[in-house]
Image 1 (cartoon, rainbow, N blue to C red):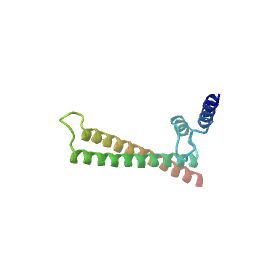
Image 2 (cartoon, rainbow, N blue to C red):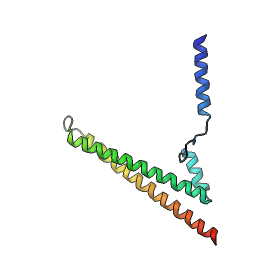
Image 3 (tube, helix red, strand yellow):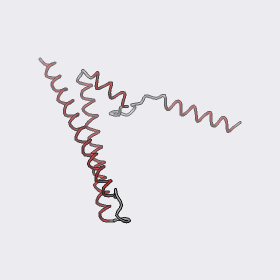
Image 4 (cartoon, helix red, strand yellow):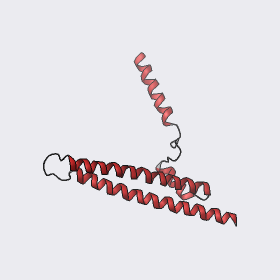
Length: 126
C-alpha cells in the first residue's frame, strides 16, 4: 500500500514538472518555439530576442570547440592503443570543425537579426 502511494506521488510530480512551460529560462527555446518566433518576428523586441538567442548559441558552440581543442591536445600527448581509425584525435578534430561551423552560422544569424532590429528601429523613428 505504501509502495503504491509512493509511486503515485512520483508519477504526479513528474506530470506536474512536465506541464511547466518549456522555455522557463530566458534565451532558451524549444525547436517549435524557435521556428514560430522566427516566422512571426516583426517587432524590435522579438528580433532582439532572436539575436541574443543566436549570440548565446554561438558562444556555447565556441566553448565546445575549445573543449575539443583540449581533447585534441590530450590525444596527441597521450596516444592510446594501435593505429585504429577514427582515433581520439580525429574524432575531436571533426567535432571541433563542426562546432566552429555551427558557431559561425549562429553568429551570422545573430548579426542578421541585429541588423533587422536596427533597420526596424530606424524605420520607426522616421
